[in-house]
Length: 347
Image 1 (spheres, rainbow, N blue to C red):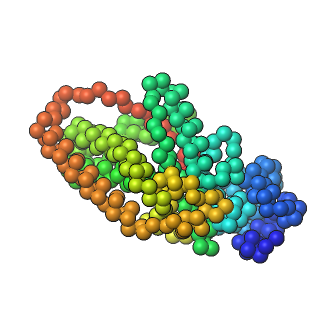
Image 2 (cartoon, rainbow, N blue to C red; image 1 turned 120 degrees about the vertical axis):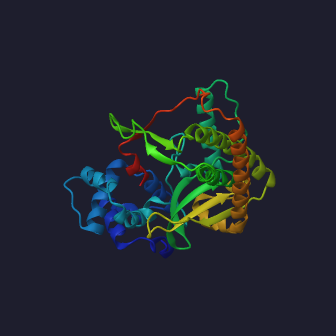
Image 3 (tube, helix red, strand yellow; image 1 turned 180 degrees about the vertical axis):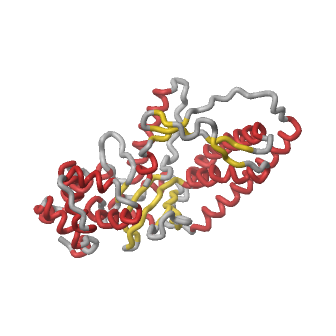
């Protein structure tokens, strides 16, 4: 076993694995990776039990109890826990781990490239949309990667990463920007509605309303138009970036990470050709080989935000002349329920 492979293994992780599966280090690399990705539940629970003892001096009577405790680790310990486990559960030279669903009961080991996985997942999602809506018209594949989560070593430093297509990344920036622009035109604040926080079974109701000094209906209409406009831009952006054929990736520093210990990066891929060029076992090396200046995508976002602000301003001016708040538009209001464990899962 090479020194390069073992250098990221802490003594605590080595001892924990030796207690659970002592023959692990004698296996060939392919079998070790397969084991880390598809670890049997019993082994996973026992590993949690051993590693909690090694790292934090915490002992539990049963592996299942330890596994439950590992799932409840506070953020102050979670980074250390994730980094320690990474060499076991990640694959390839970067110990890459995808923290997203892989379709068809497969793992990332079953896909030679990032595109192979992304295209398979896209096909599954399209089939679900068609099943749920018989009138749905399938869209051509232009890369579907959107705010995916991953962990890896980037230049020998443990990082949390987000993976997106360029069109998706710009869309996410525009979607977050809508409320800021609308507030500039019509100041408002979010206030709890009558049902906000009400418990229903294992979930609670999310019910926030806009308070805008009597202009609530206008704000709703302006916001509704802006969101629809941004979704239309998303479709246009997908086609635009596909036509450019840049075959590159922007590696962006994540702004203001929620934890000062967290070292975040956002990998933004230009098109499907870029996805085709990335293998999971050499993720960082493949990305560096076609890395583009981050300023390019940042400028693209700036331009789109400026155009969005202009569009919203024009819509606002029109509404000031034509909008009648007494004429209520029939729109379906969705009931939003948040499971009691939702934020824990997010962490």
